Image (tube, rainbow, N blue to C red):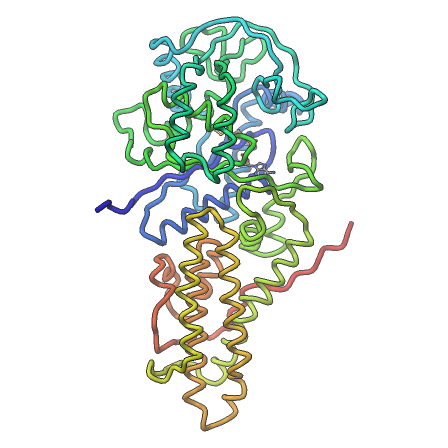
Length: 516
Ligand code: ME8
C-alpha cells in the first residue's frame, strides 16, 4: 500500500522588486497559503516558499530612474513584500531573496557544473529582447504590430556574444516528460500548450549578459566579463532553498515540489526550468499549477500599465480574510478573471456578511438568550435535522474534490450552499417561536444543536480560506482556538455546546466607496 504523502513543498514565483505587491501577486501568494493550510489540516507538513527576484535589467533601470542605490532599493521593496504578506497573515516558511550570498554561491556552482559538463557554450546571438520579460522573444511570440503581447512594447534588436545553455539537447526529453506526466502541468490546457510549443524547434537559452550592459547580476564563475541571465539565476531558488547542492540537501522534500505561477511565466518554468533540472541531473518539479490573470479594465494588472490594486489597502478597508475569499471564489482556475470593486463588495455582502456572518449571529443570539448551554440527545434528531447534518460530509467531500481538481471556485460554492441550507433550516424550524413555547424547550435545544454542529463544520471546512473567521467560530463554540487545525475538528457529533459570552461578529456589511 502506498504511504500517504506526509510532507510537501509549495512555492510562489519570486516577485520582481520593480513593483510593490499588488493584487496579482497576492492571488498566487494567498492561494499557496490556502493550499498549505488545507494540506496541514490533513496532516501533510507543508513548506511554503515565497520571496523576491532582485537581479536584472528591469530592476537596475528602475532603481536608476529613481536616482536610488540599487541595493538600497531592492532591500526596501523586498521588505515591502515580506511585510505585506506578514500583515496579511500569510504563513510562508521561507522568504527567499536572490541577492542572498548562499543563493549566489549555489547559482555559480550550477553554472560551473553545467560548463564543466559541456552544457554551456559561448556564441554570438541576434534577436528581439523584451526588457519587461527579460528574455529574447521569437518571431512567433510578438503580436501583429511587432510588440511584446504582455508588455505592449516593441522589443529591442540586440546582437551580442553570450553564453548559452544547450537547452535544445533536452527537446525530446521535455516532450517525453510532459507526455508521460499528466500532472506535471495543470490545468491540462497549459500542458497541451507546452506540448504544442515543443512541436517547433527548441532554441538554446542565452544565460549571460555582458557587464557593459548590466552589472546588477551574479558574475559567471568562468568569465568575469559577464553576469548571469536573471531567469537562470532566479529559477534555481526553488532548489537551493531545499539545501541543494550541499550535503544536507533534502531531496525527498524537493521531490514533492509544486510551483504555483500564472500563465505569463509558464514557458520559463515548464521549458527552461525543467531543462535546467534535467541538465543538473535533478528530478523535475512534481507539478506546475498555472492560473490565468487578474484583469482590470480588460488588461493584465501590472505596474507598467499603472492599473494596480493594493491588497493590504483592500483588506484594511473591507475586512480581514475578505480578499482571500473573493479571489478564490471569483476566479475559475486557469482562466482570466476581472477584478471590480463592485463585485468584491457584492461578494463580501452576499456570502460573508449576509451569509456566514448573519447565520452565526442569528443562531448565536437565540442560543445565548434562551439557552447558554446546549444539550440534546442524539435520539431526538428528526429526519429534517439529519438531512441538514448529512450535508456536512457532502460539503467536505465536494470541498476536497475542488481542491484536488484545482476547481477552488467549486469548493467555495459548495460551502456557500451549506450556509444557505442552514439558513433555510433556521427559517423552517423557527427557533424564535420554539423559544416562546414552554413545551418546546427540548426541541429548541435540538434545533440550535443542529445549527451549531453545522456552523462548526462550516468553520472547520472554510479554515484554510478564512483562518481568522474560523478561529472566531472555534472560540465562540468554546472549542479552543486551534480546534480546526485538523480537519477532523470540523465534523463531530457533539450533543453539548458551551457558548462564549460575546456574540461573534464575523463580517460587517460594506459599502461601495464613493468615487473621489
Ligand atoms: O515573473 N494576475 O515576477 P513578477 C495573476 N520574477 N497573477 C499575477 C498577476 C496578475 N495580473 N500579476 C502578477 C516574475 N501575478 C519573475 C518570476 S520565479 C523564479 C521568477 C503573479 O513579479 C503570478 O504568480 O512579474 C505571476 O506569475 C507572477 O506574479 C509574476 O510576478
